[in-house]
Image (cartoon, rainbow, N blue to C red; front, side):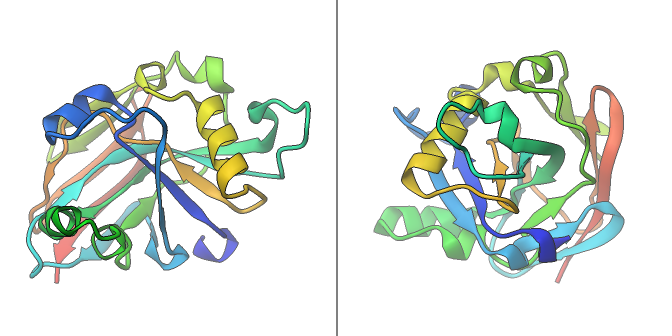
Length: 209
């Protein structure tokens, strides 16, 4: 899976309630960070190993977009997206808090190996069509997060155009579009299931190492 992925763009604080639950300001433009391609791990019922000795690791369920081609003048952002998946932006929260306090980049907190578990690709229903479908994270049988793209602060079109104009987008790039409220620390043995429109599309068991 990771062999086909080039750049991994991630959006922070793209749901108002999530920004507020962490005590962060709501951004005035998309807050973009990246992960290395080595961060990608399958999320297909397998075990995902994550760091167990560096403080809390938080789960953040997100809609992930797959880019098929460059955005040419006159094209709609929908025309360059050819896949949708559910994925996790795993975050070493204690590490991130220290980095933020020092004004340093987040890579050490966001880019560790297996920090981007990713489910199977599905057909992308288009920006407007996507708003008809909720997505949710179930942890150990209980709902932990519930989101819908209509609640994004910055729409998919805005995200695509912003990333393309600032950094460039092309075939093989993916975009983690932000997480709704409800993030929390993972524990060894947690079973995570990602639901799209009520159907399970990805799952894994957490192992702290």
